[in-house]
Image 1: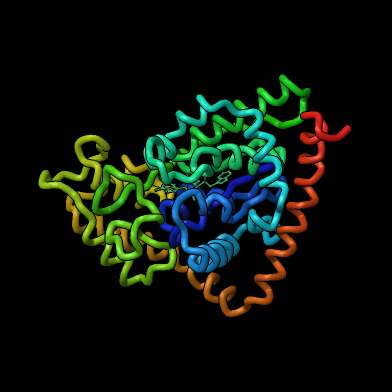
Image 2: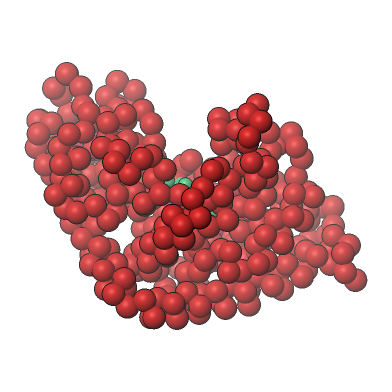
Length: 322
Ligand code: TYM
């Protein structure tokens, strides 16, 4: 089964990106998947070209450092078929369904300076998926709506122009599908928050910084350790993080603790232990830029070899070339 997924270089990656996505990309599958830095997706809102370049490189290194098969990693913009198929899918999607996408509704609708790409990028994401004939799309819970749209567009295209695309399946994350911000546990932990945000654990934060952030996590005044996302979002988030780091169901984790202090200390240790090997592999790769360039070029070439025939098939089916 072929898997595909991407990460937008819109900030320094977080523990949420690691648990909800990166770690799942590295799970063994029968064929190596396609994992890319979604740099084209990082331009839907105001962006700084220099920062985009450095975050793209950092994200690529983190993907390689997370244990993905070498040739499975590439940079999206190095494979022109993504942008080309996106246009064909814009010619397949309806304004109505694009207007209902949460990102656009929350960040863009009604604002005159909203970039057109914030409205259309779900078609680009559908292209990212459909180009590789992927059945499996490992993503965190916040991406479900996008994968559903990719499914709808594949079905519509196939029905209108003849069978062209594999219809992808949504594989919901069973644990850590939505890691919360440590200081605002009702919100998702987000890489696009300001760099200094105290509630966001970054994959490349030093062990001291990770510990300090976890120890300052918001809990509540009722001192019982219990898994209850509505009444106790902060404590529940810590239980989910510790559970995901140690491979234990969060409810079982809860039964082992009577104090918030112990829960925080163990969560901090578990996060540091989980990220430490990724950080050291990242440092090795960062010290060897030529090897990284080679790996990314190999990833790009393999991606082009798979994507081009799929783009050609769609181009023919829609009537552009006979
Ligand atoms: P992005 O860059 O926002 O997030 C990358 C991946 O990390 C997951 N994630 C989380 N999981 C758990 N808890 C969190 N707090 C958390 N924050 C983020 C996301 O669900 C995602 O899996 N549009 C996509 C990137 C993309 C893509 C694709 C994904 C572009 N093309 C094709 C899959 C297939 C995005 O911006 O993800």
